[in-house]
Length: 328
Image (tube, rainbow, N blue to C red; front, side, top):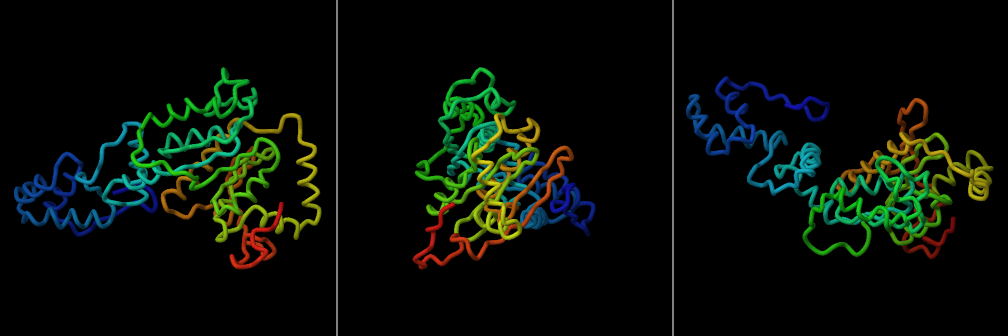
């Protein structure tokens, strides 16, 4: 059962009658029918229960009685969640958590717009776009803003698209008042001021951007628990004292039209969405204390580790008078 590493499962020592019962677990037969099949092939009816319990405990099957109705467009996502969680509910709990979550996307250019739409399509209940700037021709991309949105505010452009991507799936319960996570996809500047404020507020946040011909996803900052962008700046400055000057020049003298390859922006958006969903689903994303980088022309991803820097305020004790007082 299963064809990929980590999901493959071998059940050995089964007799031919037992194999017949296992092979009948396709979703078409309930437990009562499996018991009858067990009796027909010469087994005790309880054998069906034992085999079912064995496969449920191994995460190889789901309990059809626990499955709720799924929107047809969300079914592939539920199947993926079921494989990841190996839960008897078939991934319903994971999708319910997504539906009750809010993610704020700061910056909705070519990268941020695609991230927002991917998260909406993956079942995140509230995707708030924080970008009132106009859609530029350079923002248009297959998974982001459409060509006829040029000139309109980015937030307004994405509003109906996010609803369509979500499939108009209604979410039960009160919507969260604040974000469970924020994505920073800066279209101007470096995003460091927003990051500093999010650290002070204790809001987890993820960076995603294209810098020249390199796509960078991360770090995913868990304030007080993992490294932040200022930690990276301090590490870089320790290796190259001129790093602050490089940042300053990049901010003061940006190119007229920064590079942002169409395919690379889609890769960055996809990787960023997987990191957000991993966090919402209860896993530890690869970008915690690290970044994922993809550079053209090879497009081969690599991960770089970044530890918390002892001089960065994000790692100071909460009772320290200087905690969270640093500025970028």
